[in-house]
Length: 120
Image 1 (cartoon, rainbow, N blue to C red):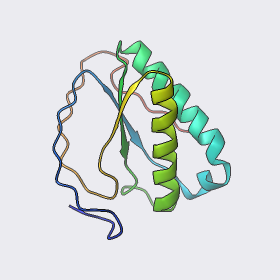
Image 2: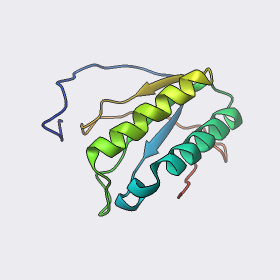
Image 3: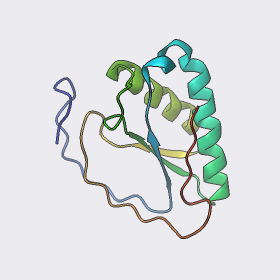
C-alpha cells in the first residue's frame, strides 16, 4: 500500500535469499548529522553481513512506527547513499520500494546474530 503520494507506482515482487535486512528508521534528530549516521549504518550492515556469511543486503525504510521521523527526502537520501557505498564495497544491495507499506516474509535462522538492534 502506497504511503507517500510522491513516489512512483510499484508492484514489483522479488525474492531475495541469504541476505541481511536492515530495517532502518531515521529520526528527526539524525538530520543534522546524516553523514555520521550513514557511516555508522554502513559499518553495522557490513559487520552483520560478515557475521552472517553473506554479501547481500536489503535496505528497508521502517519509519512508520515511531513518533520521531526524519523527512522522507532525508531518509531516501540516506538509503540511496548507503546503497551506493555498499555496492562500491562489493556488496549486492537491494532496496524495498520506498514510500510503501509492504507485505514482507522474512525467515531468520535461530542463531544469536540473526536478529540485531543498533541505536545510533
